[in-house]
Length: 160
Image (cartoon, rainbow, N blue to C red; front, side, top):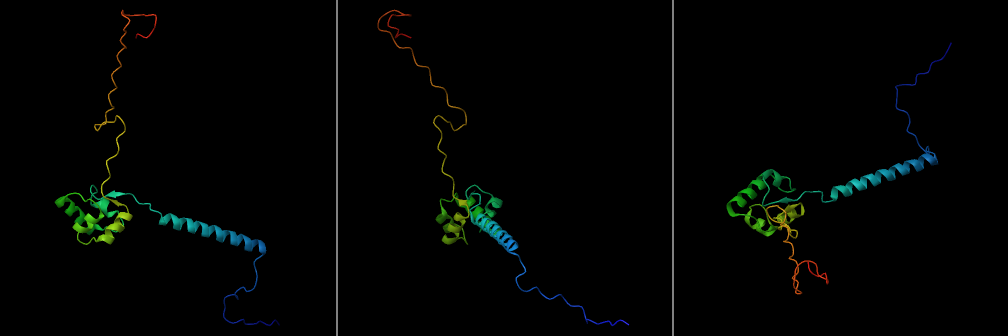
């Protein structure tokens, strides 16, 4: 006759204790941790960089203004209403003075988030025209005047 033993209700295996990793697997685990930390650090730094597009408060529409961090739909409407009634904004202080709900601190934060106040006119290249057409070619220089008299070939070869 065989004896059977009742182990009782099933239970989870006992947790592993002690040093069960080999030195090679420990160094591989450390390398993976370092790589993970390097990736996490890189992603965190990329998130901190100013990856915003600049939005000009004097030309943007409501949707464009709402893309700036700190400007919601209601603030965008107030900015547009004020701009339509009283003209373009000069700078952040002007925005803070004219738009209800936007103070000096908020205006500075909006500027850091990519809000601009009109771009300075681009320096035109030498000879460039406002209408986009190329500059006309300069007139050809006149032939030098010969004081020796006569036309055509001369011995001194200074005449055109």
